[in-house]
Length: 322
Image 1 (cartoon, one colour):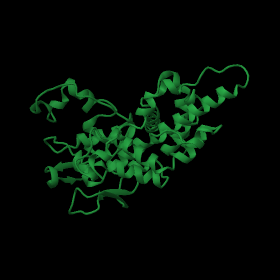
Image 2 (spheres, one colour):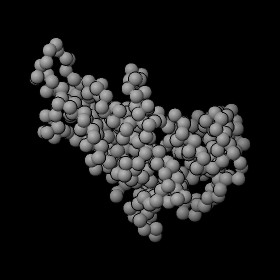
Image 3 (cartoon, helix red, strand yellow):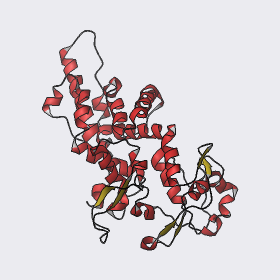
């Protein structure tokens, strides 16, 4: 697969552009067949565009319950491919230089195709690697691995986000793990030169607010991931030696597995999954007036941790086609 094929034009882009035309016509008193047919056709169009990026076929336009098409569309290879690209675009800032660097794309396809919980993306016993270990540009594959941790222990992903901290601390890895699981979003607040962002420099007031003091303290989280030596193909990883660290306001973790399990167990993971569903279907995050529907999505997702359950909650809500 080429890099462009793994790059997403978000699934909801077309749907968002058509929002004005897909809003239902004002309901009139009585059962007006013309209005009901028009609303059903618009709803069918919206559901299909949001899910697979294509207009509804003739039989779907004639359906009196167009939102039920979700049950078929969620198993459609077009949806699996489209959502996997979308997820990859949300979990990485840019496309990877090699297929295996976009491990989230391949594991998302595996999870959706096999109806696995979304949490398997991060804690499942898998590994994503090139089909041919001697050819990094070969297509990547997902294999079972008793030592796997979603795609977080896949070497191409680990090297991609190893970072370049002078002491080998995997700060970039720590941030990407939290961003991928609970949606943590941070921006640099200083343009200090490299010499000022050493382990000592990061304790300065303008840096400590992200690196040492909050519940997501990047240096503390990175400390349980071990260290990195070398760069690129020569990168090597060593296990952590500093003991347990506290995150999420009181949870103690000692290694990458305990870290990710704690993140996935936190409600922020459930909220982030529904935010992902809204962004896929609407092309944006939820709004305050959508609070009840968003809460229903979170409650539904908690039951089985499947991203398709979150999507179903949104698509089948009557308000989706209003």
